[in-house]
Length: 138
Image 1 (tube, one colour):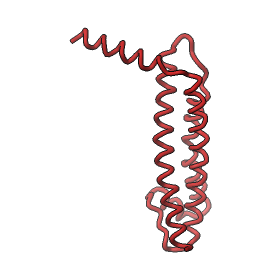
Image 2 (cartoon, one colour):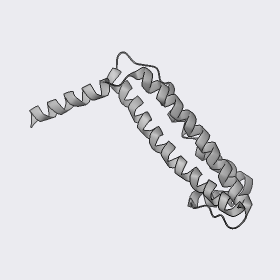
Image 3 (tube, helix red, strand yellow):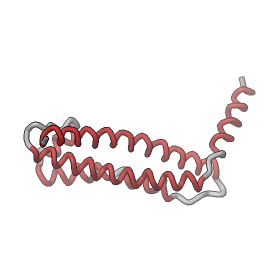
Image 4 (cartoon, helix red, strand yellow):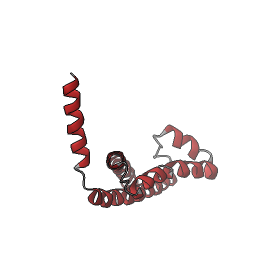
């Protein structure tokens, strides 16, 4: 059993260390930019849909409650929406560590996975908002 654990650890280490950090950094930067743009588009299309009339209903119960508080609630919702940009920016712009190369790569790969998942989610949300707006106006 111990031997299998050692083999798995070696395989995991090789896999993580095989990532090219410079390529990963470029992709992280692009994904972070896309994340920020999609967050903005989500907020913008949600605001447009809310102003379009009663046909639109916010499905997120937290956001719906905050939007009911008018400007202060909307400000809090925007703050909460853009707050994840801070840790994701930290991961994106984190400089390499020669003393801990494995941990550095784990953080970068984790950030990459998180940004891919968040961008896919936001693409679906923005697409849903745009479909709702198009159906309302056309």
